[in-house]
Length: 376
Image 1: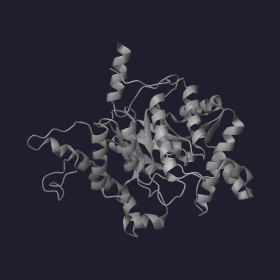
Image 2: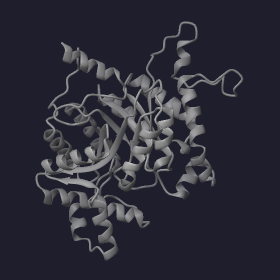
Image 3: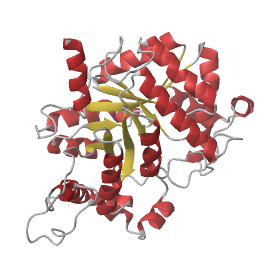
Image 4: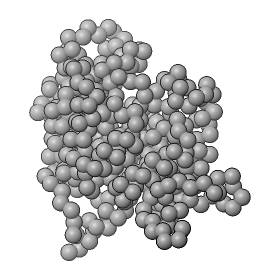
């Protein structure tokens, strides 16, 4: 009975959870709705739904989707829309954004969208926020209707404060937004006859440098670092987060997760074959040629020049790939080096079956449950 009570307590905590199986920390999933060569966006989004259901079944803590724009190989331009769909196809797993790029949107719009998600999936919505555009400068200008992009990033703390006020419906008297309410939201519990859930989306800050790490620490918020594309900054950023952390109503001590590229297959050769597809897609993106994720056959047949080969080696050095045991060993070592409280695994490769299989193999390597049933 004590174990069941512990599990129920974990479900009520929107941030912390006990790891399952033999995992040293909770494991979660970060997905980009990857679109591969020969695959439609509809098929990619169906795979994302399958992944979310698999993650729930195998005991992963969260399933997050990322906001990216103007990238043919990524179908996750609208996290709130995808999360609403996932809410209808899951029952218990926490769903969230990894993240919504706050400067791209009006804070009120985000509060309304995630208030709606909270109403659809009470008690299991995370709102991860980033300050980068999630795209190139021209696309960011189109999204924001302004060329003053630096201003949006610099205003991030003010935008965050405004968003939080809308989520809590607590602008002070005299504020210009005091009579404006994000609906669904707390205001519905204050009007005659109104009833409103006590739950609200759990706010996280995301980052790949020290700015959001420091801000998350000062505000006492959970922090998620993008190790999968900024590995050199991981330890310094997490150290900064912990050094600047101030207890808050949300957290009494720091809670840091890291996003990690990890891919498991039956053997190292096949795993390398799969991760090479994502690496080639990244080369094309970084050189101004964004496209669909290539097939393993296309990636194997591609003639890399010396600069590209150096990039591939550097990129793959920060991907945990191989057999399930090799991936587990790599993740365990990374957790020890960083002190991460949670790991969010992203597996960007071409094939639906290979990606699904990778998460199953990683779950098996950590003895995660084969099925999650709702606790009484």
